[in-house]
Image (cartoon, rainbow, N blue to C red; front, side, top):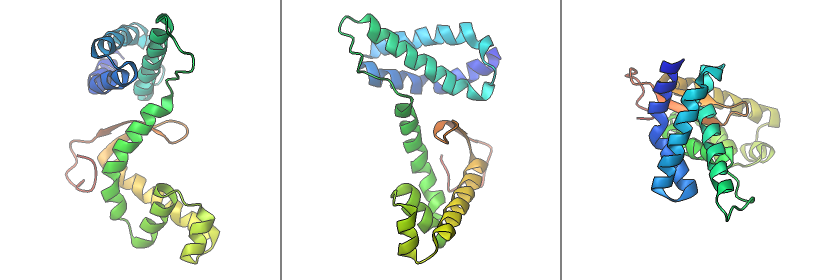
Length: 184
């Protein structure tokens, strides 16, 4: 398990430091907090049951360390909240840029349904009326588009999501030669 932790840690150390730096706005302090996270990760790595969730576990430790830092500071403001969504939003944005060419390669009817529903966030009932198809037909079309997108992306990238489907980590598969439409 230690080797797996080292591998994950090395792959996400810079992103972790940037994540912390974005919260504390001090490079040296961010590096100190990341060092504290490093110590906790390696001292508690034997408690992780699912190695596929290492990245999210490390980010949870990091969020807790940031909160602990603000608790120690005399001007601690309890309204400062380090939410998990902040990290996920960043990763989702990163992956979204990579995925756009894959979306553009989908057949027209699926691409259009997916873009209107998931990117432009238009209610599906409204999209069904706009496209002059049944609501259940549109729901099926959006689901098929998502599945096509997922299959194509999984050929090129290892994407980890939480139970809600939010992206918690991703890694480009380097041995794949037919992934011109995906992340590089």
